[in-house]
Length: 194
Image (cartoon, rainbow, N blue to C red; front, side, top):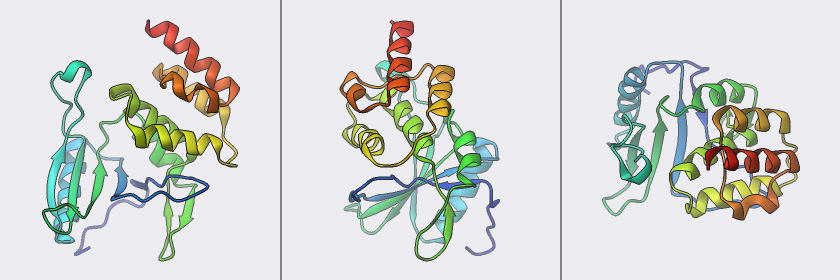
């Protein structure tokens, strides 16, 4: 990428572990190990080196309060009708640093290279943060449901610990698919949040 060399342990592909693939228009890559401003600069350079049109994304707070700092750099693929994007998630998300670190041990062969990839547990955590902002996001609900229903063995202790630490919840519609210990933690967190 024209001399841009991201740290090998600072990026992570966000692949959705599922029994059946789901069509998606974007590629999500988390960037860690740098300040948000350094990550933003590096992300812009990478996307521009690929001749992608760049833009920025924010996360609206509760009740559409002032948005977060820039949370992602988006590289648009294709025409103005939006054929897809490469989304580089910046380290403003509370889950990114740990997810990137854990993902270094979870390398998946994508046919062209083995890339560090989000673990199923960290995907559930990331999607739960997203649902905390916008609880009706169908794709996030569907991704959590698919991971919980898949044959993937989950590290329940890690999930419960992270859900307790961040006081995470998910919509009640997901309760039936959550592992028992995680469901108990989510219900306790709902009581703490009410």
